[in-house]
Image 1 (cartoon, rainbow, N blue to C red):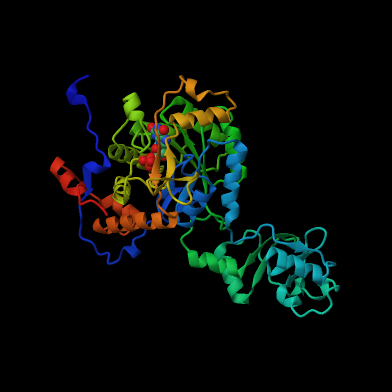
Image 2 (cartoon, protein in one colour):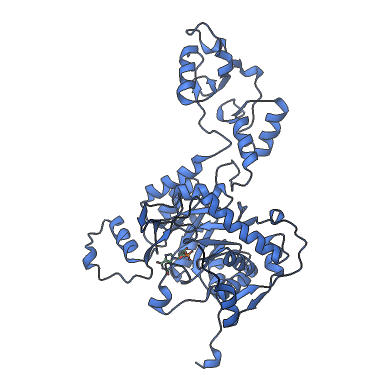
Length: 480
Ligand code: XMP
């Protein structure tokens, strides 16, 4: 080895983006849409980390509502993780897959009670084979005197109903509901069997909120993590059955034979499932993981706020260099990159995106919110929430407990942690956090004259900072 052969690496705080002439007059017009893999289209390039103090269902729901993505962590049983995915998938949809149904001999009184109890304004009337016979709305029975009459006397019969196909898109549904001025659109197949229901109220809410990251059926997008050992294929299949939109195959050192073989196995079992693999930090690693079938590669060895990998092992790669090198290689292989960890503020996100990442993943930026798992603790009058590295001592102990190992924490000498257990101050709701972060990113893009992320990646230029330039950038008046 020669000293002159040692390469040079940069971190986010070693550079700034050079301001350029801009024709953007409002940051609102800046487009932050991004695609991670086929069908995984996000409105904001933010992904919450698959860590047990960051992403379970509540966080994933909040992320998707704001246009990003949450990746449910894997440090729980397969059943537990599957249930978290189901919670996200069931939380919102423009199609009600299991609408309330009654048969035609149910009485008006019984139907009224059901509508009141379940707080719905209509019921589908079906026969014993789940074929549609009509719709009963609360208006149909509002002034009905005979509580004992069958609903068949009050319902709107099938012959007078407009229906849709089960695979109707949200745009077609809006068009049909608007054209016929419908309150409810039952979805039936060729045999008139009920597959779902769309209400104009749900469609309106969706259209107005506009920014959610959704699948084709209008459910929120969600990701879920797996490892490379033991029952990981069984876990992947269970998560896929529950409707996860993307799987993240995630281990600390992703440029490993075990990861390459695991990618091949997952792709063989679930060929259509978008797959992210990582973590890596070099162009060669991107080539190897993409070659094995990964659709996206997660970049970051040791930059994370709760990581001690670089100190414990001596290995790692300055994150800006890693993102630039990996994203350059990713273009060649036709895969996307996710810059994972090490971003302390919104400016670092802009830098990661300008360096070539298609999206960023963070733990510490999203921990400490209303939606992150865990309890608040109060110290000296300030509220905090736990945040820990997934290779920390505590996370290792939790994992052993999950495997039903008998562990005496005082005697767990075999653990060599590569992360810390810490806490972060309370930040409020994810909505506010994402608003602030994306406000910064949009403004950063307009400083670069970029109206979308592709333009940012193409045109952005970095300048390296001297020590005094770094002092000038970062040492400011204290905040009160
Ligand atoms: P931030 O900086 O956003 O980083 O908090 C989140 C990322 O850190 C990684 N991670 C770890 N890295 N030891 C590590 O070396 C750990 O214990 C650890 N836990 C999480 C992970 O990639 C995450 O997304």
